[in-house]
Image 1 (cartoon, rainbow, N blue to C red):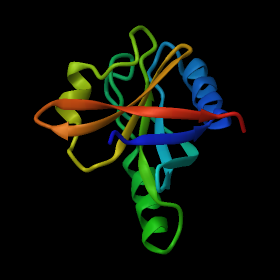
Image 2: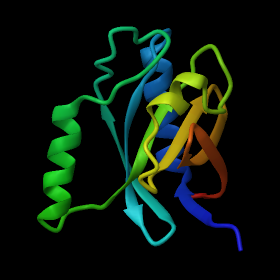
Image 3: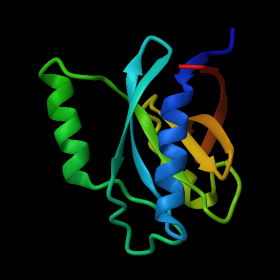
Length: 134
């Protein structure tokens, strides 16, 4: 059976706002949740040397989230980023940097939002997403 992940419309809208504010650069951040539910998001700085075409989550923000998770805080469900001039499918750059760590990747391109899971070998599998109204 295919995995279905629930996500709040508020989370999607917050990511879309962050993406719009960052244009023409890619915006990025973290997704938090567990048990097939993305409950929250965090905007992080895109520290890529080429932020118009790729993203790199600020390592300090990632390490802080990992430390908080180990201390009983929110579980990191995955990552999100925007494709300001593309579509919501993983790019070749995304595939090259993705680790098969079981984390989700949410890609935003305008009003389009799609969820993926990196499977290794430069491949992604689509993940069904159910958007809650709250």
